[in-house]
Image 1 (tube, rainbow, N blue to C red):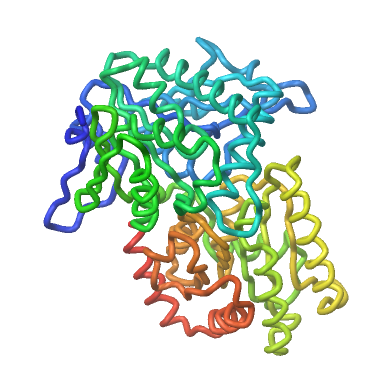
Image 2 (cartoon, rainbow, N blue to C red):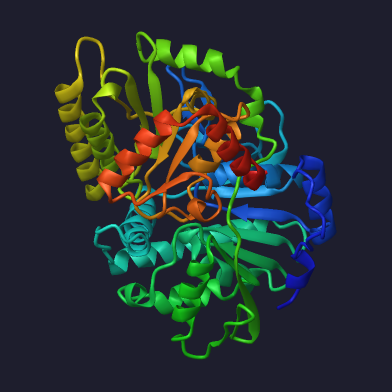
Length: 487
């Protein structure tokens, strides 16, 4: 078990105060002392891209994981180890393949790890996203497992583990390994830093035993994760599914009541740690007033007259239920003609994994559905659905969320979905309605949302109608309840 008990946070009997940067720093000082905190994640919080003028430009990642973890790394002046994927990333680094970030107010170190094209294709596009991602998300996309992909996955995990060890300034750092890209890394880090504390967080759903058994290297994945002191999941259901799988691992002893596993001479604690966002939220506090956001969004979308806005903000991913959302909106317009020409669905869909066949197929299907609905219900300059398939900076996304009458999160299967919490954080006016899929982990916390089955188009359309008609007083009561939960 090692130092696991030292990093647990004891809960007060009284309600906790807000997690300010100062409070977070005090907590980390108590838990970690002088030991450096190192976060290992595939996605970097900032990437550098070449401009037309030939200068490297820093761009912030849209990742929900970055939104959640950056305040912690900044509070302890830690290190973020990530894949340097930007076209100008190499030109921007200084000492030992790293630099201090954010650009204008440096608070922590970003260490970049370089992958060649084959490594990136096989580790990231192959084993991680054609294999593990569909295996863990039950949405009808078949996982693909190739020996050469897993071999690259193992090599890349070794490369990142080496970078973590190089960034440790003591023999006992606290290392936070993030997500399904690095299931093997905890074991590799432990071999390099035997006295470290490793916490592994699995942000997507954990597969059921019958599903995991489809992966030829399931034992290696479990062996890697169980070198951690703590393995964290989004929900209790994920913890139970993980323990079901570990119970079949030779040499492992599972203690379900304690949420613990004894394996290879050490105990690993298994817990649900639902991921959340910074509070008070910096993006919300720096945003324009809500009325100004509505005016700016209406002008950007060329909307005329009073118009209700339904907003979705997702990666262009088959787990997010984008096609189902569009079909539910179409059904709303069919069932409630009074909303025709008076409601617009704005769907931000940031392109993702664009070279993988399943993602290309999704983009084609979504575009076709949206074009058909717009032909059917559009007239003049009015388009019922505005599909924005491009990157949006966090400030732009918050502007849409602050302008929205409704935010629709329609995940078909999701570990958490931080857009739901970001919408709540954005609404300091206590207005707006969250329509939230029951398949997202966030539905277990934000139960004042209108919870829907994303596959039930009729029920989703009915929920959208209810949301658009909801009185201000009910909106305020629901939003205040959800804001208290996120805070």
